[in-house]
Image (cartoon, rainbow, N blue to C red; front, side):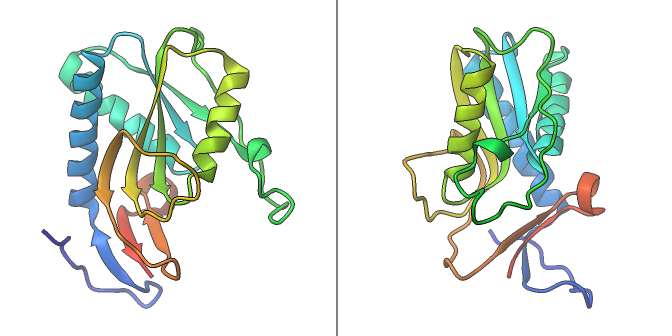
Length: 186
């Protein structure tokens, strides 16, 4: 079922494939999948990858809290210094990694990212995570999986599989960072 199309503004290009309602429904579904797979919220930690994975992790935690009636630990993971493309893109500004006081040891850690493409960001996240401790399990939740993997990485929870051409660009905008919720293909 296609996403509802919205009129494009002069600064918008491409076509909307997920609008605010689609994104909200996908996150609610992902939060239920996470709870089902984890058999509840016990020992669960959501780590958002900068930049847009952080607000997505917080939204998932809020949905889980509504269902379970308990707060879910969230944190932020910066993978800048673990990336294998620093030589070709050296101007990337690092962010702060924030892990809850309980750490990650023995926890079910769900890495949360916006768009899964080549898999290189997730590889960097796994390297960064190994420097922080030893989780019991690591899972991956993404809002959009656009394919074209270069590494053998697969998401456990996907909001929308979005087949794209390599020449296309997937643009995700969130209220927290961009003032609106939408996913476009350009």
